[in-house]
Length: 388
Ligand code: PSV
Ligand code: MN
Image (cartoon, rainbow, N blue to C red):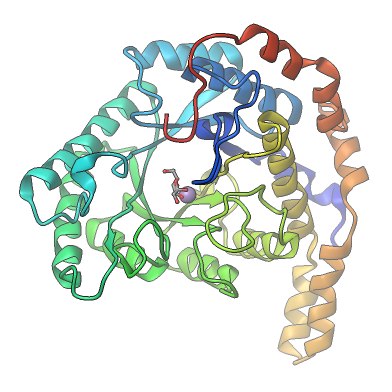
């Protein structure tokens, strides 16, 4: 039996990056509801993110999205983040909101538009140089809606050529992570639709290119933990975008719909050497809070990841291996499920308190009145939103 006391040192290594866009307003194509106190600037997004870290100790970095989070002075932004107790993390590119990208970006048939999309990524790397960020995350909306609309093969070839130019600009300590998504906004085909396509593209680039796995980007029923295992086995799992889905790319709170799936994923992460700073696997959230408060939504999210990580670490791997080797199907399954059903909440609360953190970060944050304060202070200006 693995005890909670035996995993606390490992738990202390956990770091989950927050997306700046989670603090802005978001919604569906039907309606975006505004929330009092929503940040109007990237600095205000960082201030909100810093609250999540202050109450959980789990979220030391914040991902930027360019051009949404563009500023004149990135060194000053990094210094401001540091004052708040956090650091700037992954830089996300954006090739999905410009008229020129209607028929694609890095895959486009028109060399001018491909060049424009490449240059945008080179600008993102310049920003990474200024912020000290390690990772450039690329998610492409490129695809087509109708059979025959596009030359599928030509687009893969052009994608490779474009990515190679971007890859060649990376510094020694920088990486590129290529995210896949099976559909949307294109519905017939997507150029980077699955882990295999992402893997094929990054493998052709070199060691500094890795796959980003967004947990919301799979068809229903997909065995995501199998993909995690395979990418770790191949040394190409660069990062996670954690979120939760019921139907498609719903960007809901990670662990909300299916905590057992999150547990299974984290078990493969821990088992496959994908946990901790040395592993090179970045844990990030990619979420939007449409109807719930955003800062508590992010606090709940990182706590969910922590809780399922603890349970994953509690799996008695020696006993599991013995049961598997013995062909003890139900015994092996029972060992796995025992860890999942172990209630770690009280242990985690006590452990947090031993580290100077509130045992119940949700309640402690609520008691500060921060949300009422920002609602009163942040009047005027334009609220940030997903896409702004
Ligand atoms: C779009 O699906 C998306 O959610 C991708 O997952 C990216 O990671 C994110 O937007 C930000 O560009
Ligand atoms: Mn994502």
